[in-house]
Image (cartoon, rainbow, N blue to C red; front, top):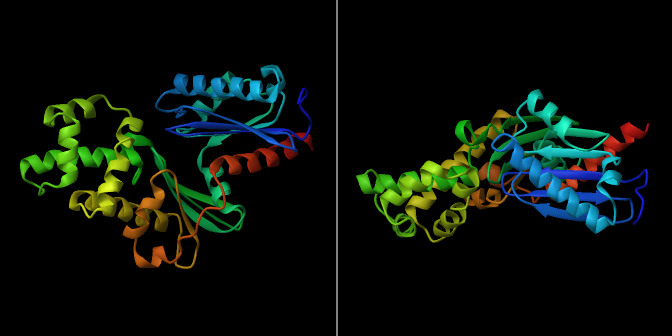
Length: 292
């Protein structure tokens, strides 16, 4: 492919763990993947990952970056908390025509298409969103300090905290607590890790918790039940009701299924596709507006 066509679109889906990019020219899709792209926790780092992804995309599509910049783009990123960050991104990104939103719209479109339903997106961070007759409602997504309920960050942080509480005698010890103490070289190591860890570093502990929860570890199950309660509460906040399909998305989302209330479990449905597919769909809609 040597020249971009009017039907081409670019989609970018950036989260706390990875940033995924795709170019769809109407015949084929070229994709690339880079690292974390949360514009609230690290704006410059996120921007660097986006440009690295665009360079990779241009190379794979046999295009120059200048050619990519003329293609309508939809950019959905974690950490999009307001107009100020959006304006900074508009000024920094190379696109002539770009729509910038947070990562909720792409995840919702990818999981549900245009159908009514809700998602609990639990990756490094988390958010909750629902759509009804084309209208989206969302909650959460306020970051690791003030929110991110049921996220991988939440799970990893809880695991460290509860491990320390077993030392104090507030909780009985468990194999998970013993494993964390060993891996961290004791309580001092836990405190040191927690003092400097990024959200993704906390989140890296989540697979250990889900593994031990499957084995019946009481501490791990306690953490998963707490996250499941948050999911249930947040879904009801955005209007979920019995009979409305729910998708658990993100790296840790599906692990909460056994801990949810029965009525919620009955409405769980597999997501149709990934957030990047949703971003491509939204990019196509945006391109129609630009070219109209």
